[in-house]
Amino acid sequence: MERVCQFLKDAGTYFLATVEGDQPRVRPFGTIHIYNGKLYIQTGNVKPVAKQLKANPKAEICAFLNGDWIRVTGELVEDDTEEERIKAQESMLEAYPSLAHMYKPGDGNTAVYYFKNATATFSSFTKAPETYTF
Image (tube, rainbow, N blue to C red):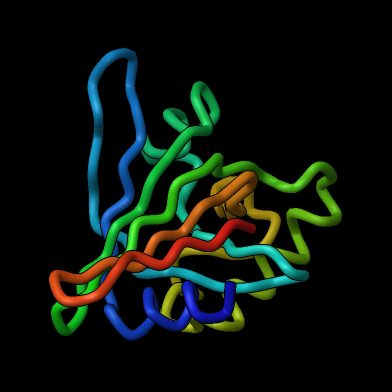
């Protein structure tokens, strides 16, 4: 999981795909963080992506860097309890202090989702793919 997170951080921007009804939706993201052994992303509850993940947690992210790319497929879900969600939000916002002007742990808007039942595949045009699950 650390290799996945580092690749996504090094890429700087990755693209998150969700589903809205029968329509795929893709947008750029930049937050990626490991907390408590889980790989998290962050967004706002007021954004369509949060509504899409609540309706259907299946998602995929993709990033490209120096001729290599990664695809991470799985479910993006929130932690089970409010206490766990707040702690994960705090950790994410500590890792991304530039977001502090927009988000606060427990503000009702800040949302962090972790990958559940995930598969990450590293690919390139010159090497065989490498696949990991977490």
